[in-house]
Image (cartoon, rainbow, N blue to C red):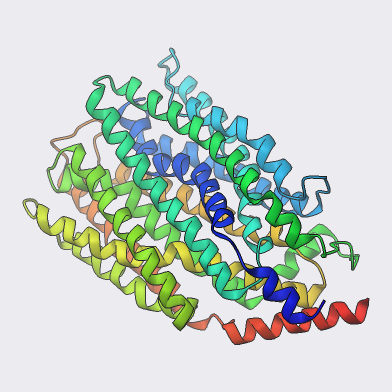
Length: 466
């Protein structure tokens, strides 16, 4: 088989494969979105925990994630089964993931603070472990379903559309449940039940819809073609000599941490700083996500013409401007608040698309250097950054609110120090992170031409080995 046949004709993705792969993202976007937007608020204002303690619970889960992400990535790379390397993890991890989605939003009968801390810590460990087992192999599939530079952006755009669509759906679902049910404990429990059920179904649809494509692309690829004497730790160290990967890590961490910080503080900003009802928070979030969903089509089209790096450099400044606008926003400027939300959504769309579409190209560069396909480990670190971003965002928000004198459960009156802290969290802090991400996006070196040269060298290297 010639180079053109292997790396171009085989890379044509049909709509059903892209759709099935995108649906799988619901298993991550739904539970993680309601966790980011509501979990800290739920723990403090419904379960009755202190903000600092609530943030610490999530951080403990992330410490566990620090171990399980690289480990599961490495294990999934080495998995050999009739289903392939990724699917067994997705299938067997789906049930505990769906169950933990329910238990996270359940308030046990004991209201003792120590008991609640132990309960939510255990369930958080279960959630993050199963989340990794499902979402990490799912993410790695994007590098294995196609080898084409632009097709990967197209595939990630489908995934991102379902990510944002899932976020919008979860917020609409939450708003409907909150409007129909008055009991706050039942509200979150029902929300968790529905999300847990959809999570399991989405995983099975994704496996069923991508299975044939995966095996058709991978059947001519022998993963044992070149053995390696390097240990697990040596392989991890080698990853961090890959400069394009360092760029992608920093781009994603800074962008994701900025977005998650805003998401965590947004209900406090809308309710306490803008003196609006809770319904405006969900509508504000839906406006941002809805705009980002529509802009996916535009940015995907521009990416085919201008490249991945360029659309990020064009898009993120919109979000920076929006965050500065929120920092200056005053009570009574409700219409302007929604205009700012639209501006933020324009740029946030590129934060969903670009890092994930860059990563498969980085994996190809690593294969050229090492002779091994290590999607699992590379995607493990990016998934890890996603979770670390959520953990740091919730912990920082909780600690800052604690130190500012924020009063848990008090909706109408907060001290000026707490209101100022909320404004700092929604403005200057995420802006500084986005500026760092833009710098490293500019430094990212893999263009479409360079990637095509990488694939050609991989092909020639393989032909020489054979």
